[in-house]
Length: 361
Image (cartoon, rainbow, N blue to C red; front, side):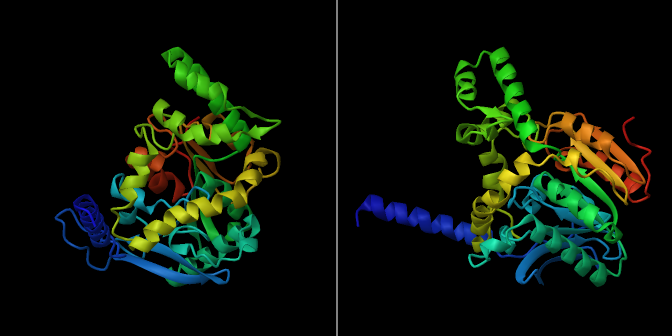
């Protein structure tokens, strides 16, 4: 082997060693203001058989008697616990926070999952089974359900199907009619990049059609994330790249093993095709508007991944015992991570108490 080859091999071995050191597969303990582990707190990984397959979740709580909050991640297939590394929500201080990783995603990815089980009906059934496991384990008749993006599409259907399991449903970046949102996103981006004088991006967008008739083109799907993030209307207002904002930070989260970190990306790629086309065309405002539990929407003003105006129109059509809509002025697609103090206040003062005193008019 040449000297250059040996140097490259050494670099690869060092990189692998660093990744292994950063991947013990153990979440860090919850700590107090002095940096000491909180007595009686919970910070653990759990694997449970759900829907016939082994599924994983991370549970953290300063006090396990606190209300359980089940978080449904986005994607499909994109876990979100790693966001806590750079954008801590602080929710584990007030809730028993459950970051379940859905069938085919992250800790719940396996190459032998039967493809025929990757259906929306199975996902709804899985979520209800996870909720029942948590209700039984923590002795709570009802828990909170929070869905983000794809998780909001799944979560609002779970809330409709099994309202007796939940104190309330919270939709963050609530999907309403995703294809219409994609059309509106492209129109917005074209206008924005024309105003900026970015001729190259305008040409790319013009060659990446989206329409209600023909759906999303492959060119649009390749371009959309980069175009949205450069415009500040993507995953987070201040995140200008999914590589530096999501891909790289995930590799240093100690809660996952190295294999699980690889599986996060395998699961994202594998899961999406099972759900994307149906999700794209489904107009929830036309079929799912009456609920038997409180419903709350947390929406970023600058969100064009799940258009904020469409979320508001959907909310206005909903009938529920209590409902509250909260527009986050400094957020795009992830208000919980972008404006965590306000999100916590809403969850504690309105959602937990079954009120809407902090809601927008």
